[in-house]
Amino acid sequence: MDHKNVNGIPYSKNGNDYVLLNHVNNSKKDPTGAIARSMPINIINPSPKKYSKGLYNLSPFTSSISQKSYSSQAKSSDFLIGSFSPDKTSSNKIANSSPVKTSSYQTDITNPDRTSADTNDSTSPVEKCTGPLANPNYIPQGQCVTIDEHKSQSHKPSDLYYWGNLSRSEAENKLRGLPDGSFLVRNSSIEGAYTLTFRHQGQCKSLRIWCQDNLYGIKKDKCTFDSLTELVYNYGVFSLKSFNPSLDVFLLHPVIKKKGFRSAVSKYEALKLVWKLSKRRQEERKKHDDLVLRHNELVQKKSLLTLELKAQKVGQEMFETITSRADQLLEELDEIEAADENKRKMLQENTALVLLKHAAIVERIKVLEEEIQQRDKEISNSARELNQQLAAMTETHEDCEYIQDELIECGLQPDLVYCIVDELEGYTFPTEQWLVDCNREESHALLMDKDSGTFLIRPKYDNPEKPYVLSIRSCDLDGSQDVKHCFICHPEGRGYGFRDDAAVFESLEELVEKHTQAPLKIYFANLQTCLAFPVFGSQAQEVAEFEGDMEELPDSPEAD
Image 1 (spheres, rainbow, N blue to C red):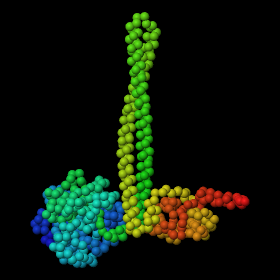
Image 2: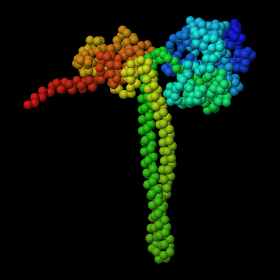
Image 3: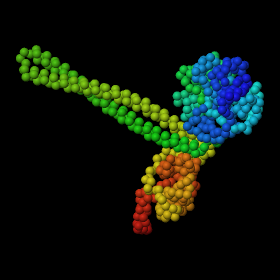
Image 4: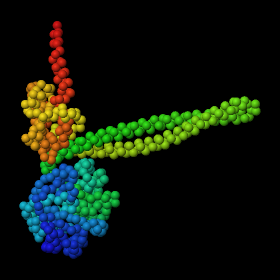
């Protein structure tokens, strides 16, 4: 096994990687030995791999790939990144003792024997790492920065996640919909301090970062970090629960302020994400409506039970009054020696019946009270579930609106974005009414005498990337009608659509249903209609029959 020495730190070669050997570092660069004892460092050899970029989380720091990720080729002008793997057994000990110190030297991954202070070579491609484990004192590759200059710059917040004078509401808006551990740093209302805003348990939290004697910390009386970057890095490795036990979260996903990053996002992936969010929003709205209906039914049932309970209690009072009066009559009859025995017996029987009715009412009241208590629990659970669903629906709606605005800002056609986001429910036509195995000439014959908006879809066997053609009767701007033909794209690994980057629909049926409401002019300027009538549909037949009947009517007599 080969060994190398970088800045007094021994590395062993394992395959193509240089791995830091466990040892007690007594050098001035790491007086605590924390890095050597707890963090084996893998120095990544350069390779032209792809890295993932999120739609609004394009980070060289995050280790986990977001579900909303899009591939783009790494550029040689990106940052040098080291990969750290914290030792779980010693992380708590280190977190409680002192912050992790890192050397101001950044090892050049293309040559472990040189530091980046000696290097000005930007030709080697590097892997853009995505974990909270990057060296906080990184130096952009290709820049000549001296060690002293780099140390002075490390006291400044990173331009990646530092947003300057950003309000709390604006910060929360930028974090909305992102996973736990997403964060950004902004200026505090207190001069010289900063505010860390992050996501935890689906909510936005804010902590003030203090600066005392050029040292930084979350507690004003415990500022121990040499730089703001080091503080952020530390809480990417160790949880914030060391500051507050309820904040068990790591700073994993910086929200990056970087001009031009959106251009790297695939339009197809972005539109597909918006389409999925739009469908999820429809599903959540339907679920919300069902929950509202169920909640109202529970409230109505409770209201009926409450009315019955009131009526039963009124009956209970009446029978108690009757029973009390019967007891008084029996006492009066007992005092009269010559009282009629039949009257006494009848009164006793009636009193017994009243008592039976009273007992039944008391039992019914007990049952009603138990049912009302049960309904109260159900209503409470229903209200809680309804509120949770409303929150989820609101968050999905806000995410959808946010990404929609981002896409339009990126330069996507607004009508296309609105078409995909639009929640109008289209018509569902049976496939046999519009999917026809015919050629171009036959489609002309089928559609020529039909109303504008009548359509069919026919297969095209010679182009696997454009396997179908839409033929539709359309009215031009000058009023003339003709049959138009346009390809339906189905690129490998994608859905269906009228453009490659808009092929987000999972099936032809889904594509047709969406465009029964959305006009085709967003794709083709000369198509001023939507998919209104399938060629073999009842609607098209009814329209044709209606127009035929109108032609057979006699002309109206002219007015005198």
